[in-house]
Image (cartoon, rainbow, N blue to C red):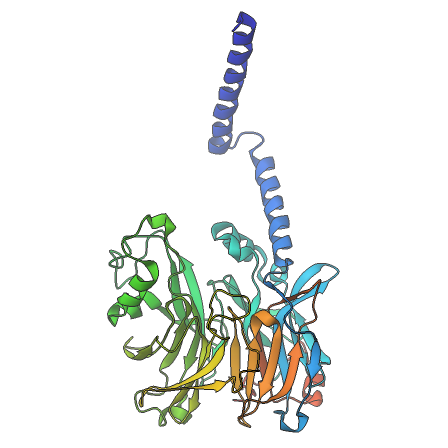
Length: 458
């Protein structure tokens, strides 16, 4: 190497060293251009997150050659309007929305769920701290009040109550996700999540045995008041360890661990919390009013427990595969949307999703939909259902972008399918039928704060 080359090399190394040292001092002592760089980074993050809100999220290949509504048996349809939670393509990109439609698919009202507007700086701060998936929250669990207010979860970020015009009444930033279930007293049960440097709780301050201090997502069961206050915060891992259910975690995570960083950190993945009402409690010999049914997707587990004592009174895993949405439906039965995720795009290995009903006190299981092998029905993720007062079921086939209402024999009486975009459809996270009329919707006033009593058909 020539002397000139050595000089150039030393100059470059010296310059690099000085740049590094100055950079450290900029960060430590806030020298120029610290403030400029900080603001530029903040602006870049704002743009990135804003674009994230408007990304399509879950897109799936179109599986049905139709869109809009179909009414094979309109006389058997449960009266009312249907609230849809999904994303729609707009000039500003894909926007999360809630849309209220009638039986013909006419949009009677809609709420645009813009997280930047709803959560403001709080959302940005949370997104900077949390995992990348938080940058693309979808509207998931929702609840519609009679006065046009809606309560909606922004997946893994938070939840908000909006009035009929979309103005924010209150927000909660607790990693809220999946379902929103209203109790008889007007309060709500919703899942939340936290990511901690070390998996521990007040009950297990030294950490949960077997998790070896790993960084995992801690699913929480939150009891929330009408005004957005947290009344109770339960760690699901506390429930597991208090009731000897750790074996399900071990089956999922594997033993021994090849590397703690390789272990899936979303251990439990709760997707529904459902309270047992006093009006129905006598029909469930094993349970009492206020007990909660919980679905733990990754562990293929459904259990019922007392939120005061944390005692698990019943649990089952064998009938389910990546299930969602257990509901108490009366006469001792619990209806569960079993996804039967078999790693295929069409459910061809296991045969598709099913509506499974279990009766804990008799240890009975039966499939109530599909009732015919020729009825296609499959969503590997997502999925909700609602029992209707006329005996029908409203089913949300999330990944297919389809909602269908079926009668007690399993025959379709009504269907809605999302419009495709270049051969793909976005997920429909939830559909709910409400006992509303056009007059009810026309009377909504953005500034009203009328009765909070639910009018949903159960």
